Length: 407
Image (cartoon, rainbow, N blue to C red):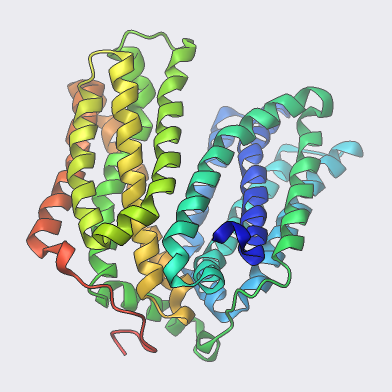
């Protein structure tokens, strides 16, 4: 059992502490910028910094994760984040804190998180083995989702006694504890990628993604999933106000976000069992179809209760598909390519999410929130049709070989 594996327990606790700090940072740093006189635009940029950092740094981060020992990367990123966050209350204590300092700290933490995330992709299968990977990844998905719900609330509670800058001491402490837990874990890394040049190291991961018979379709079809997800994320509050009759200050709007989080948490508990029974290709194919139907049900929901139920089910299904893809990639990717392959695949798929949000926002005027979500959500239908055409459920899960398919 994973709960009896001390190495996995340490790793999971380290991840949870890192996620707790990230969730608190997402609340505190934008508020601190506004408190110091920065504009709403800069605050919004800081909120978007994690996604932006991933798109900008994903490729080199994957190369670093495969060239260096993963434990070194994880410990270094955690300690670097602690220094960046701790510098903010330190500067505040001496009266020298400015908006630029806060923004620099936020961007540094976002960048370091990309490198830590890249190292994690290879660390987890090395730590638990490929046969237990689905259960381990599912547990972390559920735990991370719940942490994402609770961490901002904890940050809000701590602001009153500690002040905005003071809360960052707690976040820095969480990252130091995370680094201590990572230290000494047998997570591998520092393999054959270290002998190639940086350009070739990055290109090798990209070639694997585009050549592998399972990784390629799961990655490219994930674009449709991300387009739909961006539309839902960008317009669920708009739909609540313009179509469901809620007011912007109605607390019930938050029920939609809560339902989405609950669906994701449940998916984490189910993914191991579902993938073992059906296989990654069938999970993805069925997920595209069921997800599309649930998205249409959410867009057409006549009332709040129906919308929450549909969004909860939709989030459960799409999270199953996403985690299924992460696990499948890790199962078929050689150890020395884990960081590059997974960050490259995530960049390709995740990069469509802001595009989906932008497209949906542009369509709200002529189509309304319901129509905009439904139209952009056809990305899921396209993914389903292509998966059916490819007979994705028949693609086997081959164990990793020593070289990439392009080698």
